[in-house]
Image (cartoon, rainbow over all chains, first blue to last red; front, side):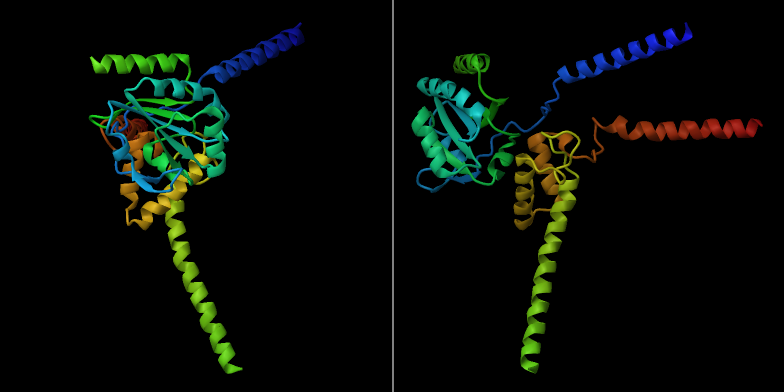
Length: 178
Length: 121
């Protein structure tokens, strides 16, 4: 009898622990900073992908209302999924889409843009990943929505764009315009 | 023969000298990156991690040091971008005030309890 009770207690206890760990698995453990500077790094200089000329990021986010800064690479699979959204964002003419090519080979990047279409008005290169860190990036893909007038980041999207995020971007732009 | 020996000496000394110059620089990067949390890995510092994020971070720290930035300036820059969480050693400010003060209060409180118990006996 006592043996039985012990056995049942052990089983219950293991089940209890099992479910705690199971719950723990579901818990999102992505860290997002709460209070960070929302100003974009305008004096960040990087080389362009196509002609290798140095350019300041501040110069690129000038002549339109909003900019999208998208960090991508040809080796990154989720970047392929979000590419169609970037192409659609380009069609709304109030946005400059600027790409930052993260730790990539030039030939691969060019081919990627040839295959999937080029949504970017300008592509900058980041061969050692330091430019992305200066922008405050965690990994790729990552997308920032920037207000060109006050050079502030309105929203950071970590991970690939999807329908929800795409609609949100359009909504934000519509609201800020009015 | 002597000449060759002499040249060899000079050569090895310059090599050691250059090496130590480089090493000092690396020490600084190591020191800073040990105090930075690798945000995309779990329970690792930037120093320990081999993730893309951490590798780039180390290059950036080296670049900032070469630009003549001090350790604190680098921390401030990164805190500005990633939040206070990135630094292991939390600063004393409004948000972390309790974090620093509670252990001190507990310590004093415990001390008082012990003294009282001993003096009663």
